[in-house]
Length: 194
Ligand code: 5GP
Image (cartoon, rainbow, N blue to C red):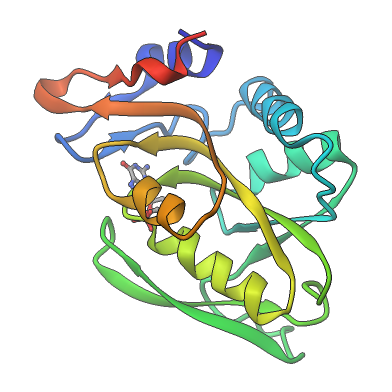
């Protein structure tokens, strides 16, 4: 079992057989020590692949993305879920449906910070049905940049996201892969054991 799985078992809560609550270290309160280790592990996995930028989405992707950016020595940009008052530049946009919130968001980044020729690592807190991930990949490709891969903190392997991304030929690196949340207990796929 890796460090992240241990934290998830200790602090996570299966709210249903589909939703995992991890608001003690990732989704509300943020644990800098856990995030530092997450950033180091993403950097270790993507070192040597020529990453020039990290893209994530507000708000829970920002902490792990910044820690990975620190380790890889690259800037981090986060897509916004709502338009900001100061965002008056040209925008790249994508539509993302959230199964957890049951709402559609138009996500956006400024063309100024995501440009052609970049090699972009996409980081997010959760991978479920892959909607957010595919929306982020769309932004990268619309900018004329390359998707180097996905760094996911927690993947719910029983949902379709991973398969969708692999089918499109993307590299997916998930630090914890949850196999099941049934009956209130959290189990992991064997691939994440160390
Ligand atoms: P997807 O687009 O892959 O269906 O869902 C990814 C997004 O939904 C993540 O960025 C995350 O914010 C949210 N999400 C999906 N499943 C869960 C879950 O089980 N727990 C939490 N806390 N967030 C989730």
